[in-house]
Structure formats: structure tokens, C-alpha cells
Length: 302
Picture 1 (tube, helix red, strand yellow):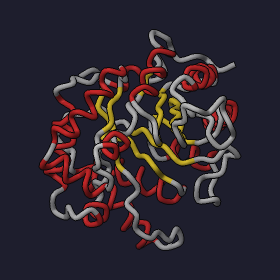
Picture 2 (cartoon, rainbow, N blue to C red):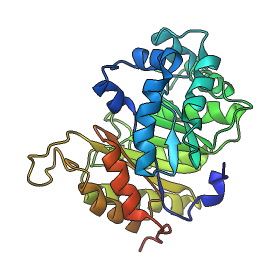
Picture 3 (spheres, rainbow, N blue to C red):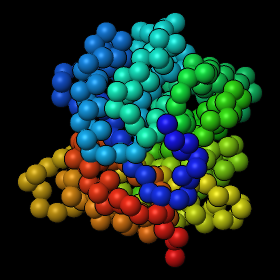
Picture 4 (spheres, one colour):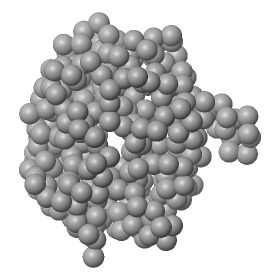
């Protein structure tokens, strides 16, 4: 497996879409059921990955992200972290991905930013999740689905406490630059990513390509002001696949896989390196992203 860090800020890379959508179509809907399927019916997970592998992403993400102790309890897998970690990596092995990313979702515990005890408790959740992967082969951690700056900071501190693996960090961002919690901002999140050891600053958004490009440009400005050289990642959320929709709307700009072509080039022009489609995205979305940037280097934003 090639060293992902050697490709940072060099060639364009596409990240696999979540397999959850394919599993839902197979009747496996909850996170609990998806984790159970990984342990007792891995061939179902493998089939979902097989379709993604054909689409051509360079980076493949683990099928589950519930590795913190609190998350494991929530999905009925308390004490099974080691087994789940091994299964999550093993299920992708036959497809020989170029790079494997271990996704870690927010732990879900209450967090009081003013309480040291609360901050330490949350930080240690992520440290314990990262320790599950000690001695295993993967390319980096993917902190994904974060909606608050405080939780993101705890996650970065927890991972850095026990691991020096590259961290790709992503937060949920609205088109106006506010995080999904309605309190923090994308700018603040980028500052935290730079300060606490992320290698890649990422955002996930439902916003149209022009607004997504503006978010990327804002991140570049923040990083430049801090003298930081993080790579950028953009995840475009597919709200609804709709073959009857005649064109993009504010509510549903990514209604078909074809919409990824222009979006990919727009984001590349803004200096984004890692591209991903999520939400209701299918392997076809990943395929268009991969085709759009095949053989291209990361652009120097104008």
C-alpha cells in the first residue's frame, strides 16, 4: 500500500462514497445492523465495496465509523472494538485499494467546552478508538460527520495522543459558512484543524458548486494566514437522486451523477485535492468524480 502522505497536495484523489446507501437498498438500514452484517455477513458488505471499487476511487473508507467506546455501546457492540476494527479492514482487502481510511464518527457524548472533565472524557473516547488500530495497516484516520468545533478539537487531540497517522478531518458546513450546529464556523474549524494536527481540512455540504468553491477558498485564506499547508477535501452531499429533475436547484444541486463533473472541476480550481460524494450518492457519482480528475494534479488556486 502506497504512502498517502507522499501524495498530499500533489495529485487529485477521490474518496469512496459511504456504503450505507447500498446497504440500505439491501435492507440493512441502521448502524447497528450494518456493524452486525460486517461481523456475521461480510459478503454483503463486500458486494457494496465491489461496486465502489469499479468506480475507481483511490481512497476507500471503512464501512463503519462507530469505534469510540460510547458508539460501540450505542450499537450493541460493547467490548467488540478490536473484532470490528479487524473486520472493517479485512472486508476491503480483496479489492486492493490504493489507500485505506479509517473513519471515526463523533462519539455522541454530551460535551461542555467549559468543563475540563468533559473535554478529557470526550478526548479519551477518540484516543481509545485510535488505539484499536495500533499495529494494523491503513493510511490515515478520517474524522467525519463533526458538527461542532469543540468536538472536533477533542477528536484531533485524542487521535494525536496515541497515533501519528495522517488525519483527514471533515465538518458539516452550510453554504453560508456556518457549521451544522449553527454556532461555530467553517473558518474556526479550519483553524482548529491546523492547530491540532490534521493533514487535510475537509468540509461536507449540500451547497451548490459555487458556494462549495467559496468554502474552499475561505479555507485557503485561513491556512495562508496561519502559515499552514494542509490539503483540502470537499464532500458533496446528494440530497436526493432524481432522474426527472430538469436541472440543479438550491435544495438539490446534485440530483444526478453528471452534476459531479462540473463540481469536481470547480473545486479543483479552488485548490481542493480530495473529492467525495455522500448522502444518497451511488457508485456512479464516485465514477464521475474519478473520471473528471483522472490524471490531474492539484491546482494552484488563483
